[in-house]
Figure (cartoon, rainbow, N blue to C red):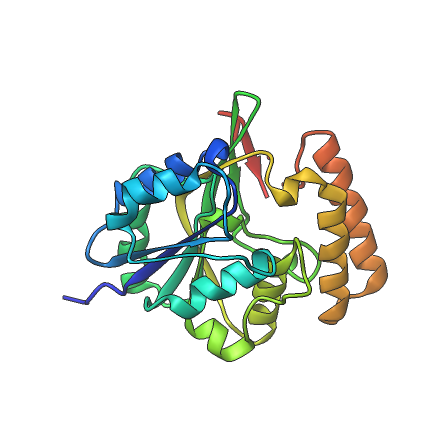
Amino acid sequence: MLQKPKISIITISFNAYSEGLENTIKSVIAQKNTHVEYLVIDGGSTDLSHDLYKQYRHHFDYFISEKDAGISDAFNKGVKAASGDYIWFINAGDYLNGDAINQVLEFIKTNKESIIYGDMFWLEQGRETLLIPASNYERKIKYVMPFLHPSTIVSKKIFFDVGYFDLNLKRAMDYDLLLRSYLASHKARKIDYPLAYMVAGGVHDSDYLKTLKEVRCVSVKNGGNYLMAYLALVYTYLNKKSRLFCFIKEKVKVVL
């Protein structure tokens, strides 16, 4: 029998007590098993988050609460502290779906790609939308983010190969890492399962145009054509505004 690789699930948080932090923690510990470690990276919260940390601390394999230099810095702290073969970010406010951990553990037993990505439920104003990334991600990755952040798991070897999250990026650091990984010949494979729920309102969603502008800069920095990157920005922004998202199943269904 093949041994299951270990997964390091990392939650980064800052003053997220009222933004669903407890749902995030509970969704992970409900599925956690001996093949999973759970790391919580807090940015020095001053709200009631620490009450939750005290309550659930015995479920954390690693915990730190200190000021950081932003999201990329918090991500990097988590990666460097992780001992797993794969890294999975479930940030404060997002939460795992159903049997997601076991689904991924079984999947990576026979699929050795560096990037595993799945479907995701998007929650906004009481509406639940199933977002389904396309399996042909290669067509899009040079200009747009083809994966969904909480439903993307990456091999830790990627960080040794292409480096960590760029501290200069405030919004598109995940796209930058995955694009650099793709350009370094790391492959991705899709798992046909909705791995997580993401609630509207995070930093990427708070000013979507700023996020897209940073995506454009990342694309061009990594060799993308400026005009194509600009057109991708406009197309994605207009689709977002018209609620098509750049992707289209309603519970609603949207194919990326």
